[in-house]
Length: 342
Image 1 (cartoon, rainbow, N blue to C red):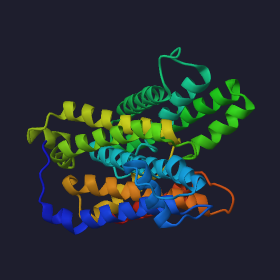
Image 2 (tube, helix red, strand yellow):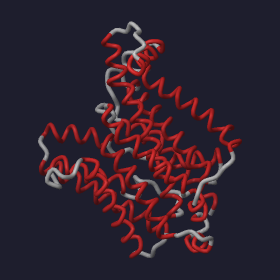
Image 3 (cartoon, rainbow, N blue to C red):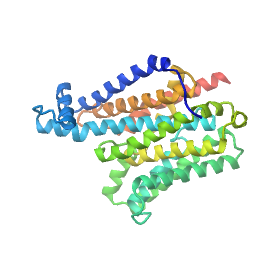
Image 4 (spheres, rainbow, N blue to C red):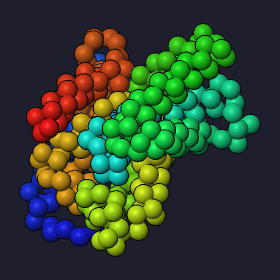
């Protein structure tokens, strides 16, 4: 299960990818309704990290440090987490269409988060993130049981995921319609479409550690995920502790998805399209696919967030709308590619 790969392939795509990620973070802070100079951004970061003492307008400093920078970092963590979840689920179920959104995990997380927020489920003992994790776990278990009962194939799993998504989306809508005030309903509906406007530094304390743990788990299991590509029986014959690895990986994917949903809402297509794009660029080996997907997911989400702020002047488009506009054509291309392979 331990990951091991040469540094030379990473130098070919990893180092440029890291540089592109840094550039994307900088763009996420600079670009907006009020464009800010790069030197002002660097001065604010220097003042807050090293007490550099640069003269900066307090309003600009507040926009950069308290709003745009945490928002951009949350977007990066969200993109990386969802892309990693897609890699894990596609590996385990051996289906190119598997991702947290299509398998109902995101819908279940949304239901859990809304139930805690509006109904007070858990009596104050459960936070929004914990509620989202419980909902995501229940959704995946329900989808797995339904898929097993209907034959157990990967196609049945995707169909069961679609049914599970509709069920949990309906539950979420019912909770909002029955118990939410008009103000709560407006806020939650906008949040469910993907909303980074409320991202703050406190949220980074949840998002970054969760994605970091998920990333390490994925790296630790790269050989097992490679083995799953040949089927569960083949993986077991190669010495993989199938049940143990499946539980660990599904738990990591569920935790990452639930945490991201609790922070920014349900965002589609990232976990589906990004892993496929990276397979095309770096190949199917998970030692390369895992870090490449994390990098690409982070960059993609930052780019989507920037687009959401500038597409309509004076208005922020929900980021889930932007990812769907890009992801839906990508999803269609995947379907066409699969058709040609038949």
